[in-house]
Image (cartoon, rainbow, N blue to C red; front, side, top):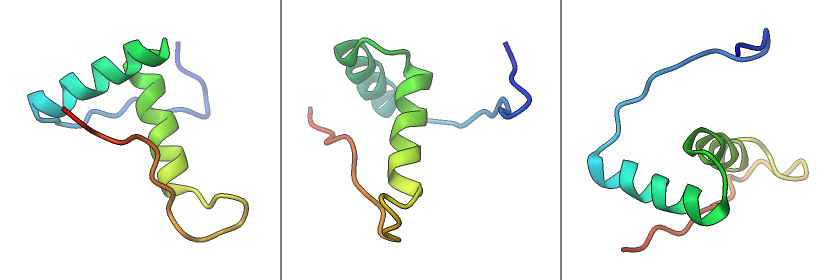
Length: 61
């Protein structure tokens, strides 16, 4: 399903990062795509009109 407001984009990830994303998405009960969208949105869009990026997911092994 493509929304007029969305675009399909491909990014290359290391296997390790893909695995971390998959595990975190499963833990949260969301798709990998949803997790990446949530993380990028929170990291790149201003939070409450604050121009500073906000870290979202702590990556640990």
